[in-house]
Length: 367
Image 1 (cartoon, rainbow, N blue to C red):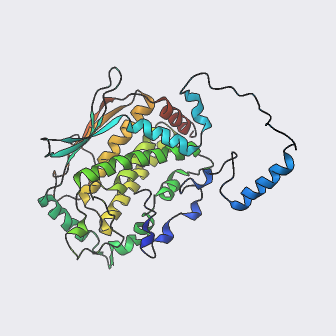
Image 2 (cartoon, one colour; image 1 turned 120 degrees about the vertical axis):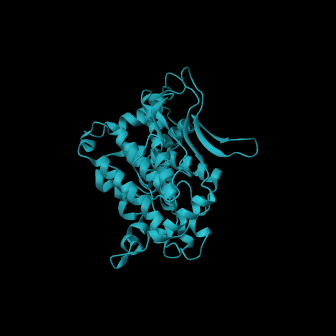
Image 3 (tube, rainbow, N blue to C red; image 1 turned 90 degrees about the vertical axis):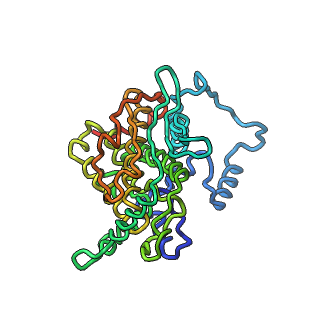
C-alpha cells in the first residue's frame, strides 16, 4: 500500500523508505517550500531577517502595495494551475470522494455485504454501484489459506520467496520505479502525469481501506504459525489487497489516460497489467494475502479508475464490480475479468472541471 513508510519499528525495513535515488517521487519532497517563504531552515530564516533589515528602505511605516486583481468569480477553475501540486491533489480527491458513498447492505444492524456507490447528483446522475462485495466465508478462507501456504514453495531448487525476495521487499514502498521503467516517467518531464498517478493511487487506496474496514477479513497469518510471512503483516484487513488495488489502478488509469497515445500503441498497457499481476502475486507469495484478495483488488481498481475517467471527462462510462468473495474458493488469482465479475461500463458521472483540467494536462504531456 502506498504510504506504508512507517515500518521503522521493524529494524532493517526502515531503510526502504524514501527511495532517495528516485528524488521527487517520495512525498513530493521537491515541491515544498516555494518562493513565498522560508523552508523551515533556521539558518535561512535568520538570513532572510538580516537581508530584509538591510534591503527594505529605512524609516518606512507601510509597505509599498502593488495592485492586485481578484479572479472574476468565486471558485474560478482557472486558479487551479496556480496552486502547488499537493493543493491540486487535495482539491481533486475531495471532488472524487464527494461523489461516492460507502453503504452497508442487508438488514439493519446485520449487513451482509458492502458497496461503494455513486451519489445521486445533477440531472441524469443516478445512484449506481461501483463495487459490491460480501465477506469471504470460512470455507473460502480455508481453501485460500492452503493456496497461500503453497505459493512460496520450492520450484527448481529455489523457493518462489527466494526468487522474488528483492521484489517483495522493495515493493513494500509504492512501486513507482517499476512503472517508471516501462513508461520513462520523470517528474521533471511528466509532472502532471505524476500528479494524476498520485490521485489514481489515493482514490483507489481510500476506497480499498474503506472496504477492508467494513469486511474486516483476517490475514493469513491469523490462522497459522506455519506460514511465517517474510515481510511484516499490515495491521488492517486482508480483503481486498491494497497492493493489487493500487498497482492495477495505475495500470488501468494510465491506459485510460493515454488511450490512443504512442505509449499505449506500443503495448505498454499490456506490460503495466503484467506488472500489476506480479506485484499482487508477490504479496501472496510473501504470505500476507490470499489470491481472492488480489482478485477483489483488481476489480476495485477497474471500477474506481473507470469512475475517475468518467468524472474527468463527463462522457466516459463506468461499470460495476460484482461480489466474487466466495465465487471460486479453490482458485488462484486469474486476471481475466469476466462479465459476471464486472458489468460493462454504463454509468454516467458528474464531471469535475478541476479533475478534467489535471486529466487533460497530464494527457497533453504524451505524444
